[in-house]
Length: 252
Image 1 (cartoon, rainbow, N blue to C red):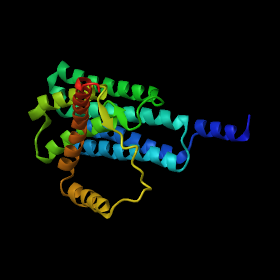
Image 2 (cartoon, helix red, strand yellow):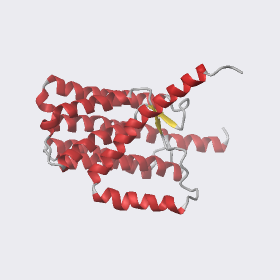
Image 3 (tube, rainbow, N blue to C red):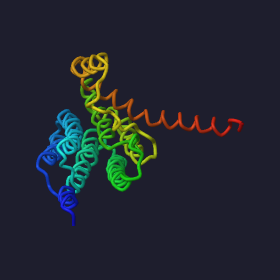
Image 4 (cartoon, rainbow, N blue to C red):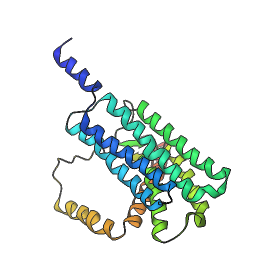
């Protein structure tokens, strides 16, 4: 076997410390969210899920930048996502608002958890054939952010989970079923961080990260991810309308 091919195989099958540290940190954040929910500290749970989402976005980028991508890292990342964005949001939501609803409560939490597992499995099997510009179905981190954002924003307005249990129930089912849908969601993978951008872009990003988010983190983050969740439905409707116009257009 040529030497460069042997090196490539070792890289794909090796275990690299740096990216897997980020994955482990994301896993810990998801586990911590569950523990804090059991202890009744739901704001800590919501924040932990957002932290897990940030760490999950970093591990892949670190692996690509340092050329330390591996099969182990991909599998470990998927298992970590299942805990942080599948089990953790479902259990936190159950403890916060669904617990007193009996069977309806834990069934909704389980449906969300099962949909997260199915979404991750489909993502892993469609890596080679999927359109890189769009995700098929709502990504699990975004679904978890919607759940965590709802909890955080209601706590910020001093609203108890039991007071809006039906809203929480509907949101849990909505997020879960949207994950296993075929709706297109922009992936952002086309964004080139090394490319030069206009000054106004830097200004808008600075305003968003250093002014808007610090002013009202729960409201801003929940609104942002709610808009992202709804964007999949908007893109789907736009594509359907465009498709019908093309069918009805006369052939020259």
